Image 1: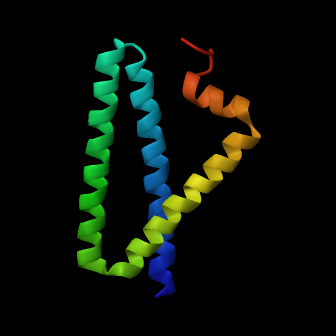
Image 2: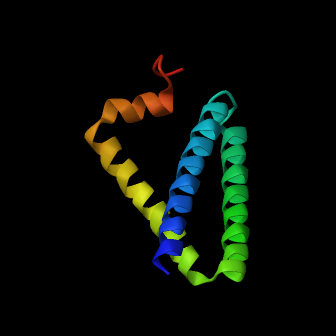
Length: 105
């Protein structure tokens, strides 16, 4: 039981990292668009990502059971907390992450 939860935490951390990377990618692309189009672009990408995650978690629940999903959600929360603490303690790092190495575009 604990092995599957630990596996779920690892998968959750990977999903969180991928989600952050995709969010930053969408934000950088949206900067080059007019405001109305950028908002639409960001909402569509976000909703697609949430729909895909919902389908993935539902499929994994059906195949592997609830223990894996608890681990995945725990890993995603852990990743969020670590990212929140890291960005709060080092604002310059977070700004570089969002704005790129050259600052604002």
